[in-house]
Image (spheres, rainbow, N blue to C red):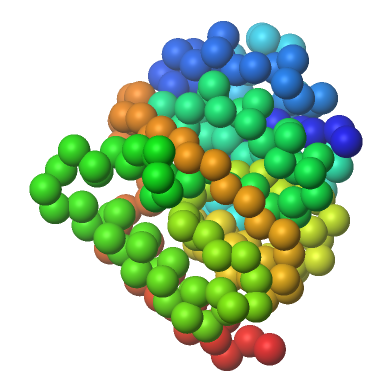
Length: 227
C-alpha cells in the first residue's frame, strides 16, 4: 500500500518550520502540501524543501481534503496540520492500521491514553462539545458500524477509494465529522489510536468554537435527513 502524507496549510510558517524535521518522511511514500492561500512564506518554505505544494482554487478545509484526494498518488491519505496541535511522532502509527484492512483511522484525543489540550482546564467546553456530537452520532449510526471516541479530530487517515465512496461535500471544518458519520453509515472499518494534542505554534486557530459548533449541528441535522 502506498500512503500519502498531506500537510494542510494556511499561513502556518511558524509551525511548519518548527516541526518539519520531525516529520517521519520515511514512513510514507509521498509528502505533499495543500495550501489554502498562504501569504506568510509557508508555500515558499516547503518548495525550498523540495516538497510538492498544491494550491487550492477555493478556500475551505473540506475543499483542501478533496483537492488532496484528487492529486495524491497514494492508496491512502494521512491528513496532518503542521500547527503544533498534532504529534508528528504518531504519523507512523497509521500504516499498520490501514494495512490491517481499516478504511478510516483516527488519532483520538478522547480515548484512554490520549491527551486533549483542554484536559488541564476545569471547564473543557470544546472537549465536551466533541463528546456530545460523538454520542449523538452513536445513537443514530453506532450500531451499524464501528464505535469511535473522536468523530471530529482532523488527524486521520482514509483509503482513497473510501473517500471517493463517501461523496463528502462539506466545505469547512465539518468535513471530518461528516467523514466519520458517513463512514458509520456505510459500515466502513474504523480504527483509532490515542494521540496527544499539543499547544498551537504561532497565531490562533481558524476553527472558532461557536461558529464551528453551529456548523457541526447543521451538518448533523443534514446527515439525519440524508438517506
